[in-house]
Amino acid sequence: MRTALAPKAASGRWVRSTSNPGLLVTPSGGRGRGVASVLFSAARAPWGPTLSASVVRSASEPLAAMEPAAEILVDSPDVVYSAEAIEARYEYRTTRVSREGGVLRVQPTATRFTFRTARQVPRLGVMLVGWGGNNGSTLTAAVLANRLRLTWPTRTGRKEANYYGSLTQAGTVNLGLDGNGREVFVPFSALLPMVAPNDLVFDGWDISSLNLAEAMRRAQVLDCGLQEQLWPHMESLRPRPSVYIPEFIAANQTARADNLIPGTRAQQLEQIRKDIRDFRSSAGLDKVIVLWTANTERFCEVVAGRNDTAENLLRTIQLGLEVSPSTLFAVASILEGCAFLNGSPQNTLVPGALELASQRHVFVGGDDFKSGQTKVKSVLVDFLIGSGLKTMSIVSYNHLGNNDGQNLSAPQQFRSKEVSKSSVVDDMVQSNRVLYAPGEEPDHCVVIKYVPYVGDSKRALDEYTSELMLGGTNTLVLHNTCEDSLLAAPIMLDLVLLTELCQRVNFCTDLDPEPQGFHPVLSLLSFLFKAPLVPPGSPVVNALFRQRSCIENILRACVGLPPQNHMLLEHKMERPGPALKPGETAATSPLPHKKESTPAATNGCTGDANGHAQAPTPEVSTA
Image (cartoon, rainbow, N blue to C red; front, side, top):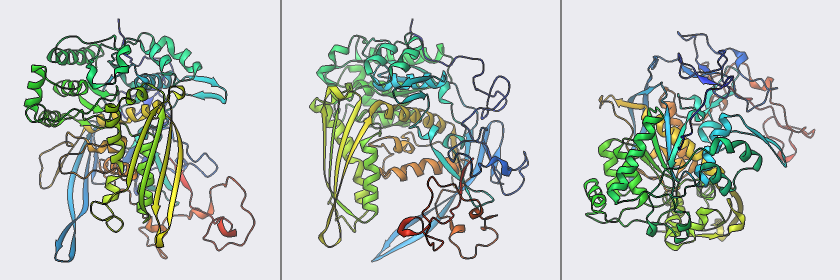
């Protein structure tokens, strides 16, 4: 019998408080590590004391340490906490631009929003299409290893389970300045109540019948010492049969295909729906999210009358006409009211699937996990063009030896990946008409080769050539060794956790008081996708830091905090007023340096460069 991966009670483990879902406690009532509690207040809050100075890490303590605590409380008349929800009034400020002759007229605007976020986190199930692949087995192993608090020996020392690479679990956000003018950082997951990753319940499908322990061994991603400890926990996990349509993936995948759903396309669709219902019922789940992490498919042609509308797509499935396996899973998920996320580059979410999601008010997101080379590209091109350099040539070469690489060795599947990897710089180029004339863009070449020996350790080589002033050129060459599945797994985790959080958020405006949720095409997830899907008419943003700021600032808005603008005006004024002036200057307790500064004259402003000693800098504390 197949067993879904679910948390087990264990003595001494952290569990979620029944009286306060935002609080992690031990059976004896102690608090869990890794979730921050800060009362962000200028005055005493009605529900408790203000943050004491002792809560903030001192300069002698590790800078990145997190305070063991529960939640953030925002002390503001615009924020109301109840047992059920957090309600926040928020003024969204932006600008509207109109063209009048040769003049661009810019008009600041403000819209009052009211955000409501349900505080009770659900029991969440995740169904992975391609559960037995490298990504699926690695994510399952990661959650198990963290839940069991495993450690294992390696040639470089003992390692312990963590969630490095996850925005929600290992990233931090800036809350503001404390009384000493120091910046206060908290874990990303502390902004709003989120499902704890260790509480996720897993199930899924795969065309290969290997159990998850054997799949983990086949993937060759994890150290043997970790695999041995995980083996008894993963051996009982077996994927459900999946859909196999040979013409959509490379012929070299046929040898794996021994675990298949039989029947017509309509029968396969119904079986997927039954699997989702069975998982939800048998595991006692409140919600299920379906994530495609299986093979890259060839593109599916969008044809009027076949997949251009929801009605036509459903009729196509009933008639047994061309539809991709991933689209079948997307349609089944939407019909069952489950969010669907596409982690591969093919056009799974054809117009008919998007229309169906809109009709059913179900979240969908895609396409293609942004993990290694493309993530670097979305940062580097933003840096180059943002610095006024005209990037004219981008050449990206990859070779890898895992099953993804083998599948991508087929031309049609490679074309899907090439499209998603090439579009990542478009918005940055189009944003600068000083550098690029309309229609002008850099030469952009992407190459992927299959080299079995390197396995999951993908090699990525990039060359960026940019034009400088007065006819000069600048060339950057990078080599990036990407542990492919170890980069993808935390992205999959973030996709699931953020999607579930968005399902608990609704809002209204003063002009439209009827509550609504986010658009079914969940563009907030763009940070995690190479080729992000956005609602019709919306701008596509690929620049990584803009994407991250979007997530952070929307979550801040949900608790009534202003967007992070990085101005720090209180530290840039000659005479800051009482409202901005920090308390005791942080210069009285500077951070310890990792190295001794060379004795030298200082002008009191500059750092170690040019012979100046490092001036005291404001302490950055992590609460």
